[in-house]
Amino acid sequence: MDIKRLEAWYDEHHRKLLFRETKDPYQIWVSEIMLQQTQVETVLPFFERFIKKYPDVLTLSKTDEETLKKDVEGLGYYRRFKYMLKAAQIIVDQYNGIFPDTYKDVLSLPGIGHYTAGAIMSIAYNEPYSALDGNVIRVLSRYLNIDDDFRVEKHRKKLDQINQSYIEHATPYKYTQAMMELGATICRPKNPKCESCPLSEHCQAFELGIQEQRPVLSKLNDKKEFSYITLKIYDREGFIYLRKRTESLLEGMYEYPQVESESIYDCLSQFEEEGIILDMISDQKTYKHIFTHQIWMMKVYEVKLLSKPKVDWIRFDQKDIKDIPMAIAHRKIK
Ligand code: SF4
Image 1 (tube, rainbow, N blue to C red):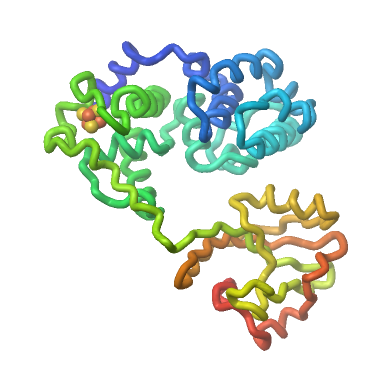
Image 2 (cartoon, rainbow, N blue to C red; image 1 turned 120 degrees about the vertical axis):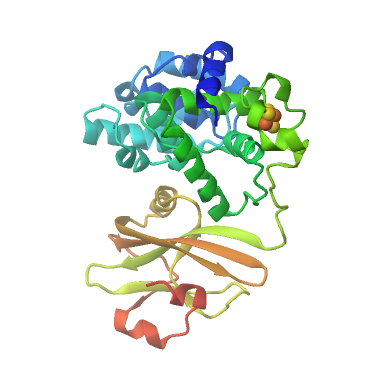
């Protein structure tokens, strides 16, 4: 890829957005959280007001959830701001109010996934970490004419590695923003403006005239995918809690309690609201199970129960689990 040309294009043509003119990791973080599922034009006035009211992590950490939600009323997806507040409090408590500067630490904050961590690391710290979002997927799948289905996780991962290999030969803060900007303004889903594109000379989809056929994103088929946080819950004596299913699928089988959610923090706070206190011990791997009409993606965590259990949780000696009927989807969890 002609990265120099891409970066020069960015220097000359990018929109002068408030959050693209800063290297402050805090402001970049705020903007990236606000931009999740939300258009740039919608975000801009919120971002400006937000930074005026909360100019730094410390100020943000001192507010309360209700006030914060009120401040962002109209942006939608309010859960992200709950995590934002939680993350600000962690930064104050654990990092003296200074935004962490390693990928691992940034990624460990509530509400920050690989994309957001990559965006913060590359834009704020000029470190070569890929930030692959929908815009970048579109640009790369066209540029390289890749016909993989990018709804499939392994294909996204492969493209993420390609993006990583490019950023390692680039000026990271420019490259990430240039790809985002190119996807948003030139390499648009419909009617891409290829004649103005700095990548057009070697763009394979452009050459073949199949730009709008990329990226391939399969229709969501009739297999519905569920994301669960699945909990191995231990009490102080080392007993474990299971739940007997009452749902028609696998009715009567035992399972580890699970909540449909992407986030352990969300899940723990849901329980907290019911008076059930769980303390995270460790996270394990993600398991996948395919049923005829469903796919379960289960992120498994070990937690300790510090309060009374939920009424439908049943306490077992760990050695007895092998003897009870258990959904295969959970039996394979080690
Ligand atoms: S040439 Fe067209 S399709 Fe290719 S990257 Fe540029 S805008 Fe996208």
